[in-house]
Image (cartoon, rainbow, N blue to C red; front, side, top):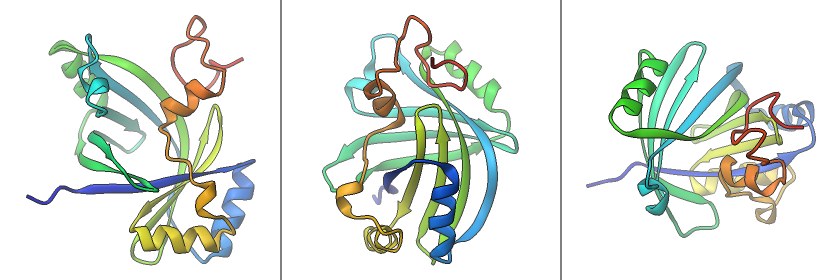
Length: 187
């Protein structure tokens, strides 16, 4: 059975405008305009998914919602893992349904995302988050490597941590104030 694999890296930028300018210089084409994404990561009370290095996410944005399962990370210079994703009609209702059957929200995070396409195999996203600006590259290994070079970056710039891991590393993760990475919650 073929598993659909997601391959991605993040690159840090100082500002969204700097990222956008670098992306547009490569000839990448705008796919989706900037919009707010609100993501909820779910787990069982005993942390079963976390122990398995897996993720269950419900993403809600203005025009759509998705439910995504991500399996354990596979050793690679890039983040590589199984990804199963499906659109849903009503994200908040699906989230409540999952809570009713025993899942709890372990972490919530928000980002403004704008997406571009480079060639046939690389999706490029500018993510504006409460902890900074990131460009996420998703596609084939060769496509990501080539686009990284077009951006004037190198493999040493790759960030493979999740937004949760990055949030915890920032020192802004004062969970007494807010255990989540949402706009307006960081001091």
